Length: 629
Image 1 (tube, rainbow, N blue to C red):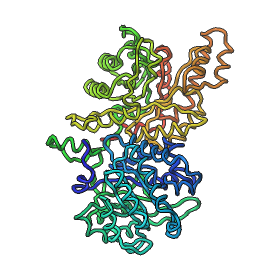
Image 2: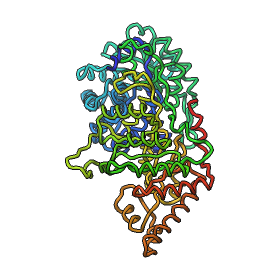
Image 3: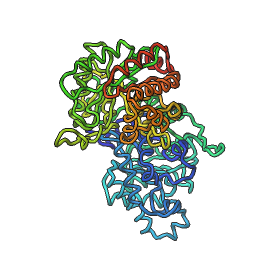
């Protein structure tokens, strides 16, 4: 069970997240754009930012709702859908956080200046805070974070309103731009005392004019440390506008050193404000020696008096499968489907042929297209034992609940299977078996998170597994050249969850592959383009028109239909496939060959030709082969 938030702060330092707004601008969102509405229009983008901070070490994340009140939203357009924006912000953060990470509902000031506040009805301002707070609570936040307030006249009523609605913890942070005082000249200690009297549980500061100015404010607040935990979320220095970008000068290491001084003064919740990124949070985690993994797991271990209680959790690496790949040649993964019957002899024979041809890994689907097939883990074990080649099993969230999935991960570890491709799974409605329904306790993201936990030595309940798995986590990638942004964001989220290799949907154009490589070059992943050797013109038409995510160039389909005989079409298709491989092999990290209709002789021939060509690819495998050693 996750520890009580306030009790934890009285004992240890908790690491929050960094900026959302300025980080969105750094990632290409138009400067000045209303970022709160992105909860509705770009939820995957917001989710990916939460995931990045969690991956960097954040134990608390904030909702993307800082300006989601009726006054701030109205200044950027019609102030409609206030509840929807806040509810979506809380829901996205809650989904990213899971059961282990705290979610703070971010609430900023109304933006009304002192003169306008005198003219604006107090009841309207109170209603604005009330509707935002209620939506955040409905979305499942664990606590409320009032931040960047400049006036006590606005902060105190907001806290009091919150206290009439809920008893969740409240953090009250004000901006102190100089000498430990607000812009109106009120001392930080006065503000902190007033906030505690109004009902806040934690007081502190954020934003302002950089790290050193916030340190001064914390010095003023430090007499309160015996009464309540303090919090500090400084900016990364004072920004400079360079071109169309705001550049923040403070380096993560410097900020971490100043935060160390703040901790000595009583700060127990630290994070970053404008200009800070996941890189800053990762540096804070290292410098401050804050426990990186979720608190529930640490607590569960401590409750059992385990000798490893309180140890710093290690970041999992690329996994044993990738480390043990030959570093001097282009990696080749070849997919075989388990049979729809009990005679596995043909697949075993195919694996022998593929190994002899030079394949590095055999991948095995788990009931692809929801069609009943032999158990892929049992078959993977047979192949490793009988053939002596590495295997990757596909694992879906469709067929098993979280209990079964965790048992499957344990089984893979026990059987020496060191590669898992985590996928959601095709819809059960397309199954060839009557009465089948999908489970979907988790989809690919949750499954990757689970495997990553086992790589750290824990199950989902926080229990110590007594051994750490060493599994290379793979993911699927459906690259769409016309509009790739959403799929690339999904890829970034998966990378943040521990994914180390990627197998794409079949690609049929060298230009598409090159474009994909350019747009994913920022990710430290072994990316394997899917190569599907076509076997006929009809096969090409079927894949293009009926299989989601597969696009076959019109020129390719037209070329195949120039031949009347299927065998001539197959020869032409093989020539097209080989031309594609020849163009991309020097550029890619590896190749993922898919045996059409389990015709392993085709992929065996291609593998043999690839080895004879002697390609070494991008060379990235050399990095993975020496990783984690």
